[in-house]
Image 1 (cartoon, rainbow, N blue to C red):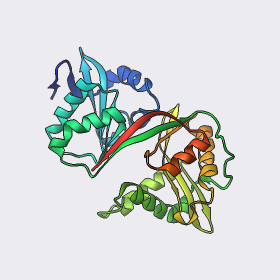
Image 2 (cartoon, rainbow, N blue to C red):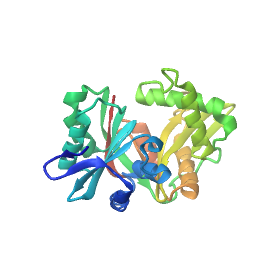
Image 3 (tube, one colour):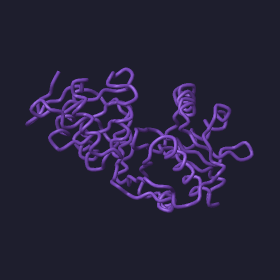
Image 4 (spheres, rainbow, N blue to C red):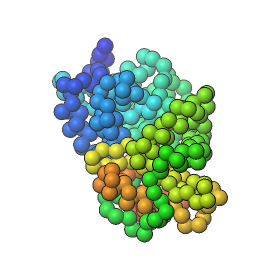
Length: 283
């Protein structure tokens, strides 16, 4: 089914649209890292992708997209595209737990959905998007290493603690403990989880949540509260940057809440520079 806006049409993106989709994604590889990584990994099949990729077409050509999964992620959308996507989304209930992406796109899309979807749990309206395409500016911590399967028993509780503190909801509510552990195990298997473990406990951890040939995105950065204020984060993040640039992608990116001054100081010291601004709406 297609929804007609002023000048365009919304429908699912198909294989025939891939050249235009790839052109759009390449236009901003840092901002579009998540969607690019999903397409590269599993293609356009909604079952494997964990969501549907909608496209906004003008004169039959794809000009914008919207990833609709656990996250709702706008891709290169203008006002007409966002209104067309919002009209499509307003026809059904909310299925996503967040909207995330470039700030102006996310906040405008949310303004078009709020009256139908109801109040958000939290709106994080300013999240600087950072990137680093060179070696870190501080010496890496040699104790930070890729996590292995033997680390899962101490790593999973650290991941739960970080997620709960950051998002405000435990990722293992509703009997999701086994599924969450499996997800962490998958990241470990991909060698995208990095840890420092001292005396049998996780002192620092971070994961690469999305990756393409050119850009990877760090998530889940966490220092055990008992070890904060000891200068651990900067050399630990420098180590993550080195591991990621050597084994995953040449550019390392992340986004951070504007009010998290300690994290922003850490990333600035390591060498990250702001390239854009994200926003996240949490439900």
